[in-house]
Image (cartoon, rainbow over all chains, first blue to last red; front, side):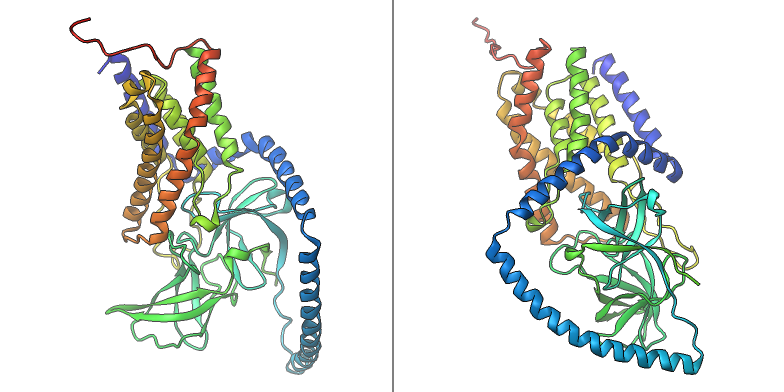
Length: 268
Length: 194
């Protein structure tokens, strides 16, 4: 090997070792510097992308829109009926709460955000949302949709944030099964894209007994997620010699995420 | 030579910006075009070892800055078994390995047979993704290899390889602009009789 190549190789390994020994805060600083450096390009690129999307949406065939309108009208009628029933129940619920002097239901302080980019990395299950530090979003905040828990905020920039989805194994959630004393840790599994990605509910007791369709909620323990947010439903249970593990179908349709809500605070 | 190296470095940086706008093809098992890896691989075969290692370091460092996930967070009493994630900087070594692989057939490239290098970019991307997935699996301590993952790796490699002639064309243009020779079409193997 030529001396110059050997020196270059040694420098390369030195640099690699230096990078590999960086701690989390230093890595976060590097990531922040990287994204602030490329943010002008990302902003102009996003503007172009938005223009292209609006142009494409305008070229939708009118027939297609007509069919959609009919479908929406029929859905509207159905929803009006449901809403009427919902209002009755709400009234009845308010009366009962008043009678029982219940505390007002917990309210979340949330920021609505749209999914700007799906699956920006090869292996990690993440999405990017179009809100960031300027909207008071911070790391580790829970992200919800109207169906249930979506995940948690990972990296925050000024106008964008990345969200680790519940389907990634890095997003662990303390979970409980409805109607049982069972509590475990729920997480996804990377590399499983076939069909609906399933979640794993681990560290359950070895005699855990529940049936398919039972709902799984957050416990509120662990300091990351508020309590009683729907996570999914039990699909199957696998019993081991020391503990049991349940397979859980997520409540959220991750392939169809549009608008999500970042919980800034869980209220009083 | 210096001008060519500098422009190649800029090309790699431009690939990082472009990569941000290349979505995953959800209908093709979330396969994607890995433009950063492609530009690096094509450039690696046109430069010397020190420059290749410099490019590998820059690519690996920035790739991990772009794709790395943050700490898990939460109460350690509840989340007592946090998921181990890959260390920042592991991609530097993967890029270095891929670069050396590409340099292995540099003599063929210098003879003008760039088609072999184009084919090797696909193989290198396949090996890169396989190695990355193997590391993830090793860190996780549980082997899960679904058919979808295999398809994702293969389709990503093929899609990326399809664009390699364009990147080589771009590099040839840059080298001629910089008056730097990266290909010696006229070179023939000398025999003992001539």
